[in-house]
Length: 141
Image 1 (cartoon, helix red, strand yellow):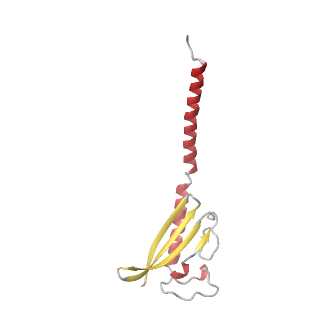
Image 2 (cartoon, rainbow, N blue to C red):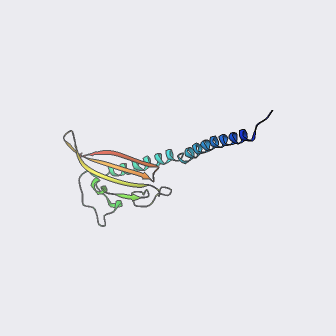
Image 3 (tube, rainbow, N blue to C red):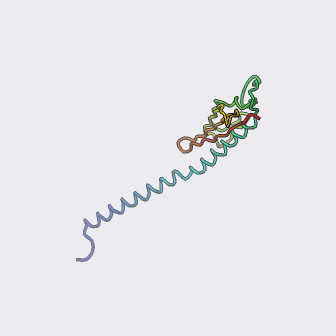
């Protein structure tokens, strides 16, 4: 006899279906995470922008003008506890296209080689895709 029996044909179809399912699952996983590098790059850029803004402020605590908001922050300590849902510029205006990010800032006093300093940490998250923390020291000069 030449050819395939019905049983051989069914087994072949099942094996091919399983193989194709595995291939499609791998492609789906790759496509689902392809935005992750872009999200990480954006998160790093957001974190760097916040760090640069904070680093530009005075080390010594100064009274914050009333009403005290991010646009009137004048020293590093004012940023401690800052939490933004959606990236914003220093005037509190949302940045288009970056509303999915959450930014949290902490400022903590530390000592570096006997000198007073402040550790600034900026945590940027975007759902479960990205969680980046950038840190920097602000020395008392």
